[in-house]
Each structure stands twice: as C-alpha cells, then as structure tokens.
Length: 413
Ligand SMILES: Cc1ncc(COP(=O)(O)O)c(C=O)c1O
Image 1 (cartoon, protein in one colour):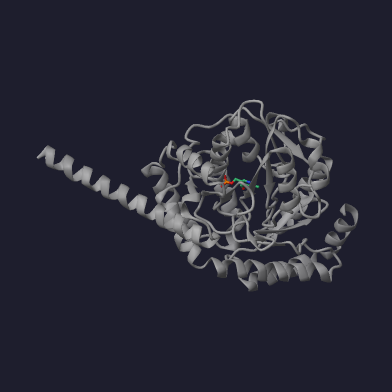
Image 2 (tube, rainbow, N blue to C red; image 1 turned 180 degrees about the horizontal axis):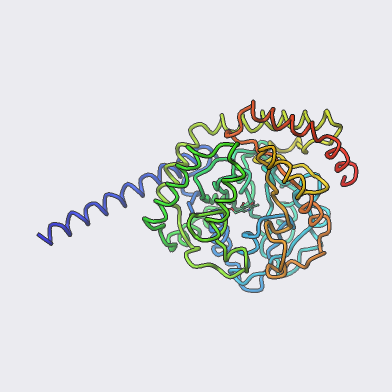
C-alpha cells in the first residue's frame, strides 16, 4: 500500500515537473518569437537581478573587476555586481534621457573594466551605438539593462538584441508583469550556453513561492484599483518588509550588499503562465502606455513644461512618466489626498536607498545631478490599470497644481 502511494506521489511529481518544463519552454519560445531570436538564447529567473548576476558570472566577472553603470538605477543592480566581489563604478547620466552621459563614459574605463551596463530608464533605450563602439575599442562587454524596456527598440532593433547580453524584468511595474520575474537574452551563442549552465544550477522556486506569488497576482488583478492605491501601497510595503509577500526587494536587500538567502532562484511555473498570458495582449498594453504618455506629454506642453524626451533613435515603452517637482514629499501628500497614484521612482542614484549609500560603493555627493533628480522626481502611471478617463482625472489634478509645476520646472531645469 505504502509502496503504491509512493509510486503515485512520484508520478504526480514527475507530471508537475514535466508540466513545469513544458510551460517554461513555451514561455521562452514566445519571448524568443517576440524578440526574433532563438529560444536557446533565452533563460528565465525569479527576478531580473538574478538574471544580471548570472550573466556577470557567466562572463567570468571576478573580485576587483569593475562594472560601469549609470548613477541612476535600482540598488539591486550594484548589489548583483557586489555579490560577485566586483566593484560598481558609477557614471554620470544625461538629465534629459536619464541614461548614461556618453561624453563622460570613457573617463570611467580602466584596465579593470569588464562590463558596461546600458540602461533603458523608464523605457527609453540608451543611445547604444556609441556605447557599443566604446566597448569594442576597449575590449569591454556591454549588457543592456532592459528592466524597463521590454517592447521598445533602438534604431529598429528590439531592445535587448544589440549588446552581448540583456536582462528584462517582469516585476509589477514593468512593461508586462508576472508579479516578479526576470528574463535573460544572450546574443553571443557561446556565452548563452554558459549562462544556461549557471541558470540550471539555481534553486527552483518552492511550492510556497508559487502559491504566494499566485495569490499576490490574483489580489492585484482583482482587488487593486487606483482609488485604493495609497492604502494598498502601504500594506504592500509593510508585508514585503516583513517577508509575507514577494515584494520589489527583501528587507535585507535594502540594508546592505550581502546576498540574501534564497536569492539564486530560477523562474517559476506561475511566472511562465502569467508571462504567456501577458504576451498575448502585449501590443495592446504598449499602445495604451503610449496613448496615456501622449496625453500627459500634451498636458505638460500646454503648461510650457518640457515634456518627456522622445528620441528619434528609440521607441519608448513609457513604463512610467517622469516629471520634477520642487517639494517631492508635499506633492506626494497632495496626490494622496486627491487619490492620484503617483510614484517617486527613482528617488536616489541607487533607488530607493537614501542613507548609507557607501555600502554600494556610492560616495554621497559624487553625482550631484543624479542626487538632485532623485530628490525632485515623481512619476505618473501609464499601465492598463489607468483607463483614459483616469488619466484625464490625473491631468486635471496636474492642471490644478500648474503654478507649483511651472515654478518647479523653472527652478529645477
Ligand atoms: C533599472 C533597473 N534595473 C534592474 C532592476 C531589477 O529588476 P528585478 O526587480 O526584476 O530584479 C530594476 C528593478 O526595478 C530596475 O529598475
């Protein structure tokens, strides 16, 4: 009897595993088809940051190697570099694009530089060709941080397809969401195999991880509305800080650059399932973001405030619509009183860290422009949870506060 139960259990587990592999395979194929690459170039992760860590590891980044990154990013990026013992070297950003200032990049290159990270901030690709040319000149690999940029393009090339490798995030606020999640695309087939080997050494998400994430996705889809945004945000931050849910970061990740337990996790079944669903209507999702961003851009133009930069070399995914205010805290409070779902993203050169930045090798005061932007930036939502009617309500709120916005623009630009 016991033997039979054991056999049935084993059979069920094998079936789950088979189903798991099958759905991951389908998801990789769908991503590969979208990006017009081969599915062997794609690998899946619990979070984007884990994908970055695995690329760096497969590139053989060693202790004391240097990795250049923009001084306007998410803290998990320098953390992934530091987990390998390497050194993050911050470089200045251009305040118009929020991406690397190419004029200042070469100065940061030394004999120890192994990688340059080019970011798609808020969905706008870096101007990649000059960065790739610099990389080639100095024998340095370039990785595209496409955490914000799935679906955009650079000079007609899909984001992620131009550099040696790229990683994408499918966390809540990203172009499409699987709750949390990461994808790596590697354009060098030899390196892609190495990355695959590193990925296969990762732990698989547990049953509890899958259930927790599935519950969060359900709540977000069925309960979260712009009207309860602020209350939900409070609950979300509290619950993720206390480890009850898989938030943007575990509490420890925001305290220091020591790899937290269970960091090295591969992609989950639930992420593949949700990713496949999201990709089916991804075109509609992107079109909505662009429509909402155009409404915001037009509203700012009516106030004579320079709108968000849209380059001729890249298509923007507009995952958030940034603007600057003089008093970030006061404006957030006002937004909360009016039930306007505003974000303060990226509120520091290594968001969301505002104290002890040296723990990530960032010297306070070293990039005053990035720090200034961090203290004055806010952003408007563009995703499908914001129907056009809601976007128009947000615009009315902006127009009501036009004096503050215009004054801020004049003083800060
Ligand atoms: C610029 C940037 N890079 C990387 C990441 C990491 O992505 P993930 O949260 O999937 O690890 C983020 C997260 O928001 C980000 O903003």
